[in-house]
Length: 132
Image (tube, rainbow, N blue to C red):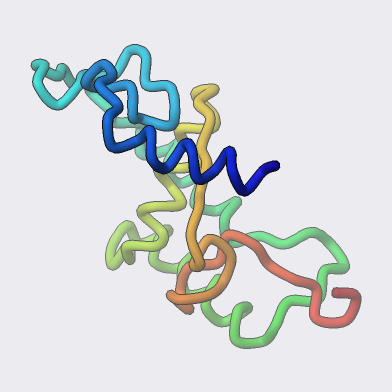
């Protein structure tokens, strides 16, 4: 049964002699391994594009019922973006994700703070206060 298959795999793991990187659970083709030289690519974007992405981060659809506290946060974020100063870490992250997406890159976020959770200033998902 399934229990025996798991037990057998557990015992076999002690004598496994695979390729150095065979244990990695995901595919990393194109990325340097820890024992290889990596290369970087310039990642800057135009300030106008950053502002465009940033202003969209501060918007909600027409008729959307934002929480009043979130309204204040988004208003302050927009003011900071307009001034070009006091950009917080969460805004910088969201700007990075937005520009990566516009370049056609896949962005996957995981963890307990992906929506609004651990860090109250990071809102990757907003909920309508009246309609869920």
